[in-house]
Amino acid sequence: MRYAQLAAGTALISGPKNEELCAGYLLLQLYPVHSRRWEEDRSWIFLGLAIRIAQDLNLNRSSNTKSLNELHSRVLLNRTRIWLNCFNLDRSSGSQYGRLSIIKNTDFVANNSGNWWQSEYNLPHFDMHLCCYNAELRVIADFMAQINSDPTLPAGTNKVNHSWLYAHLLLTHS
Image (tube, rainbow, N blue to C red; front, side):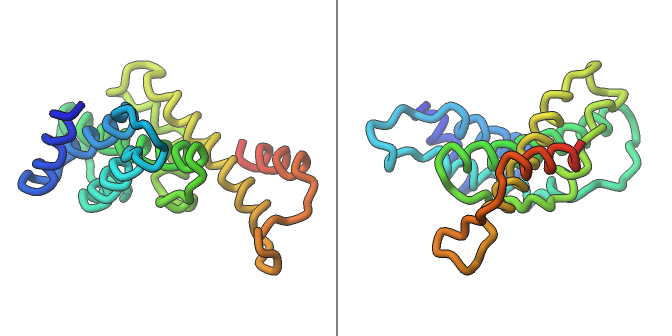
């Protein structure tokens, strides 16, 4: 892991930005070096780098380009796959560590990923889990936004029936 971190730092400083570098930072976020204290954990920094590189590469933008061939289609699918992983890790890590998400819940690619997994060049049902997890995380984010939306209170927490609100959000997103 130390060598991987050194290589990632060197690539960030002197290497080109590409999808592989972004995926590498996502892997470093998922499999961090063990730290003795929570404050020493650097996985959140790796996720932030992956998201910024993905945005620099316009992975967060929907591509309207027609694929030229199978290889080009697979490259476009991989770009979307990396962005969806950035979105999902941003949401899940944020809830795990109690931090705000970097990517807005109104992200176009994430909000329109429902049938993305059905591409002819994906293995059958291969990316279905990515899209389902994405949908679940967006529902949870909407739920939390509804609960924490009272600007008149210091904590911002609304006094609402949370069970009803969660059920309502599930129904509106399905």
